[in-house]
Length: 109
Image 1 (cartoon, rainbow, N blue to C red):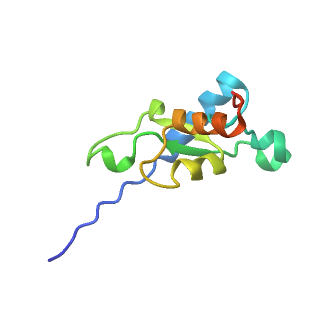
Image 2 (cartoon, rainbow, N blue to C red):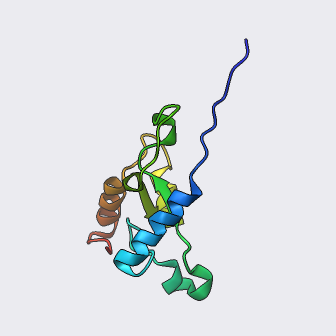
């Protein structure tokens, strides 16, 4: 029996658009969970550096499904790893709630 593996590529153009929208709206690229800003912390090396999380898994979109800007969240590397640490994956709100609970206070926004 032969298995066919369908690979879905991530859309780098859409990620660039997501970053551009965030820069226009907020003036920075800060994590949507914890507020971490790579530029603020690392200087020029951190400019426009942030990860893009698919809030709807690509595998759930079907063969012809499309990812929209609203299906993406900008997150730091640590928050992204925590979201995907184990199943079920956390939503952005789940990650924020865990951070608030761990710190006993509100996360940066």
